[in-house]
Length: 570
Image (cartoon, rainbow, N blue to C red; front, side, top):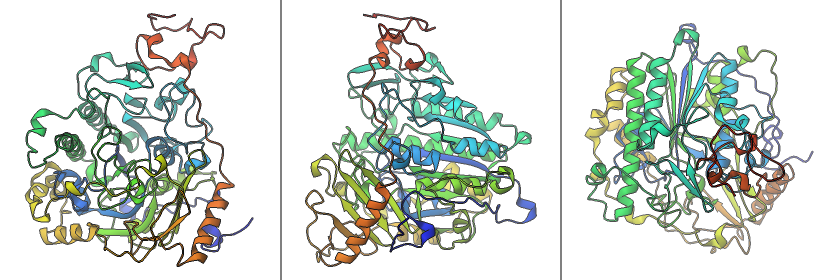
């Protein structure tokens, strides 16, 4: 096996063979009780759309309060679009190793996250956890065995596909239209008209309230629909009362997007308050993350901002892959801080399993083929990250790939023929003095954290926010970058906005990173994408998106033994 010249052999960018030797939680004997884990995943949230990263336009006091009293992840990367990112989170693997690397999983596709892969809730269940999901799945539903209740979760209220309308819960995709809201495996007709963010929040609160701590800790995966756009007829259905309070935002669609962000922030506050009410907060790990970069104005009928980063959702520029994220827990030390540890979304699986005390409970389980690395010790103690490189993606169908090694990033090819390779969202800036610091203290999350004596002083909050605010210099020493013509090389430490292509100045670095991509590509499995199956048409299933692969007639492709009443079958 050929080794990388940029990394030690134990951190190969190919198929990483990682021996998971969980070392337990770095706490005293009195705090060995496994923590509750609450993972809150925003959908399509822009880097510039949360206050703790420097934005003063959209109020996010509850999320900010967690950030200011925890750890802001400054070098945290996600995949550029929904399904690949969620697959990495659940499996601890790069999408090139699960077949999920090309675009998203569509609702009528007969495929899902491979069933032979053990995923995060199953690892945690082995440690005595009870796992629940509220919200979006988007990892396969064409057969029931691909859906959450068959992949380690005890309950699920939410939707199976990639998006839907926040109020009527129907999803429009590829000319098909149908209801997509589930309670377990049952169609949740009774939730019609209840806003999706409220549905997700209510289930999360019920899970917390009903959790029996004597039977073990809780893993709650809160996968918001917000702030993904809905159906074309009403893509940003924010609450009118909230939107009316955002008159300082001049563009109306941006105002509606902001309303969805605020509703999600309110949900975060309610979840934190519920954890406090049931005496679970002091023994919890809370992660807040976006699944990918934000879709900027005009992209997917949405209006996110990643400024000052380059690019948008579904591109490999920093605006598509550098995620807004934080981790909060009383188990962390040296708080608050801006964490410079390099981290990828695939790292959460080994990180959280180690935090849960994985070594003893996993017993004879000695090794797993993972791309993710445990950063739990590095995050707890603010020590050096074991991760030195990140494969952002390799998509051989679209001809795009990118990799970061240490401070260098290579972009080779791009998506959309370069149409979304610019810088967007400067109009979404406000002066830092417009930020409302009082809201951080007065919001329900701020109040809860103050009771734990973990909310830092205003001066420390200001210092942390200033450090987390990304700025870019107008330095044009590098050549213009056109990755459709030749690979581009960026020194991210000095050029996080990817303005200066240094490929010609550093040909040896360019050569080494291209070799890294080649080595990684040699380990890739083929993309699992399939054409839409006509059996998935919701018209055949009372206009619901369903597990159509469980019921089929091979002759007519019409369902014959389904318990669901058929309408208009031709």
